[in-house]
Length: 419
Image 1 (cartoon, rainbow, N blue to C red):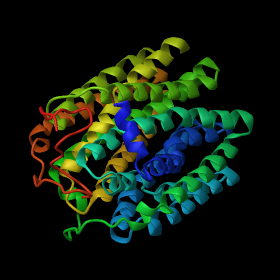
Image 2 (tube, one colour):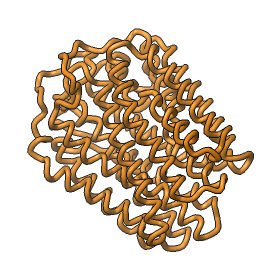
Image 3 (cartoon, rainbow, N blue to C red):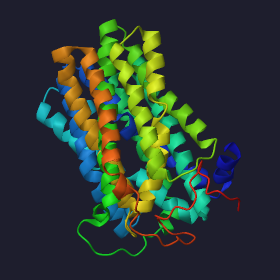
């Protein structure tokens, strides 16, 4: 698998696109943590912190599919860079104005979330034109899932470091400035400037007319809910100990666990359809969240956080292939953006619920929200198994196609014969 990843990174533009996308997504990947730390430093309550993070998440959820559809229609540079700049300006308003005026704070995070550029979906739309063959594209999906866990591991530590060296407001400003530079790197690349979406059938539902995609999105709403609740619950746990640094370590451990899980998952081949495998992975993900309610000492809790993240990257990598198999032709950026949206809505609900849960029942209750979210995600997949088993289109994708619902070979998935 390492050799396969190196083969992808050697492809022209691949390393730049992956790096630029990860850097460009840094503001979104660390927004909940940065907002919570900023609000707490301003003297705000857990409920206010959770509500602001929830507004950001909901605004992102609304903006991603709209901007994704705009990218499919008008191309990447015309949408991605202006959106990144406006999003960064929204966060700058929050950092400079503070939470003294809550309406202004809510408006600022809403703008920042609404204009978060759909870089994640955009990258997956670019892989076929950059890499060519299906097997390399699917391996790139797995590499993408692993690489983003590096961001989720390093991001919280970077935010914590910036807060320790300067302030939460500085952290917000620096992270978002870096994000604009990442988006700029992507949109100035040749593949991004040249990319055009495949012809699409005119339909007001766009990607959402696929029943299989709807089933997947329903499940990942609850995965997002679990992750969102952990953001608030971990801060409450750190406050219980009187050690703010524990929060960064818990979130970093969660990302590190996902990173390890993604590497191990991609290091072997798996038989069977990705939809069936996704049910098993999400079940194990739910099982990993449940022990967090025990809230042991910081060392044991850090270990539990790492374990709870082990199946996250495999679930995400597998979901990319399922999206590719079920999304209607010509809707690739929008379809992947809907996956980001369901994560965002779920995370927003999770943060909104976890805040009051801390104040009503204590830290263990907020971690229980995460366990419930994982179980619900599994139940959705089990209930919609027949829909997910039948991709809407079975035509074999051609070289350079933007999405392939036939998905012959997934990284880490054996079709039973060697090429």
